[in-house]
Image (tube, rainbow, N blue to C red; front, side):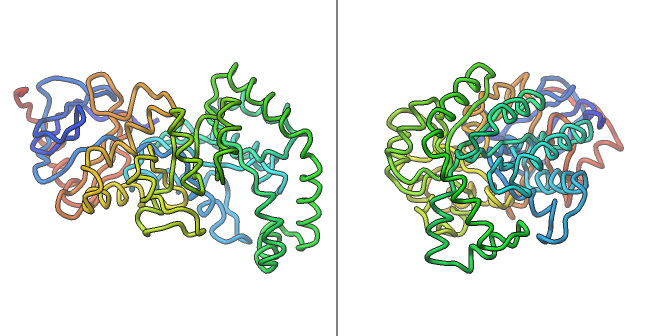
Amino acid sequence: MISHLSPLRLTGATVLRDGSLQQRSVAIANGLISKGPFPAVDLTGYLILPGIIDLHGDAFERHMAPRPSAPFPLETGLRATDRDAAANGVTTAWMAQSWSWEGGHRGPDFAEEFLAAVAAYRPRMLTDLRVQIRCETHTVGTRERLLAAIKKFGVDYVIFNNHLDEAIEMSHARPEDIAHWAKKNGRTSEEHMAMVWAARDQDKDVPRHLCKLAEAFDQMGVTYGSHDDPDGTTRETYSLIGAKVCEFPTARTPAALAKAVNDPVLMGAPNIVRGGSQSGNIAAIDLVKAGLCDVLVSDYYYPALAQAAFKLAEDDVMPLEKAWAMISTNAADVLRLSDRGVIDYGKRADLVVVNADTKAIEATISGGRITHMMGEAASRFTQMLSSEVPVAAE
């Protein structure tokens, strides 16, 4: 177990607090935002921002298997994911693990193995890593198994998605992509499509299956939503069964419908940074400008989170305060995390220290523990820790 920082006070920086950027200090004690005449670290020239909360990321898959044919032990992958997240200002993150008819690294067997590995690694975590289950809709026969895994491992977030239509369309238009998809799971294209059609045979049972899952999730306190909604009808259907989170809508209509009924909309931060969707769907910036996006997530690349917030501010789309809220405060609200997402007394000491000139993240503090530190910020912390001279409170 990594111990908390000794009580200290961060001074001289510009701090995002109470919804605005302010010149004030931040005190930390026992892992929480506090008050007190503690030893000071001079962070003049830096921004202190709330720790980033990432509601959906699959970058961990690259750490588990840098190449499809070269998997590494799960603990090795989790440790690398932990460090990757921390180096990019992330203090809480949901790793999006599939529960799919595909099998392999996206099947129930691997999902259960992964959940067990996360539970075993938890005492050594720096970042608060959690698991989001991406449940394929056509997995009717695994319902009780899924619910048992969610209960056993304390999963608090599930997203429904359906990739069958994508697979069928791909088999006609881009058979080479199906071949690549199949090869990753050690199958031929024919074997892969046989699994697609077998899953499609469950069509008539899927609505009842999803309703039963939704009822169980409500009883268990699990937040749930849907992924890649293509149209308003799909989003409305999910919203009606309680799947309120609208993750990565592929067009404006489902996003607009979600906002009309106060369902949160999540989009990928890489989409903002790169200027569009890598898969050809709607550009996230269009939804942000229209007020139809609440939260940005890492998707497949942790560095994009902070980069997206700064880009929105630099391009005058919105002030930094609001842009940063899309990767902190708003995300905390979606998952009902009342102890984090803002810098305030009694909240978790989740902080990101950013060089105001370069926008480089030079320190991350998660739950009052240093999880990442580099550059000039590291020098300043080291100087304070070596001297430990108390200063008067402001």
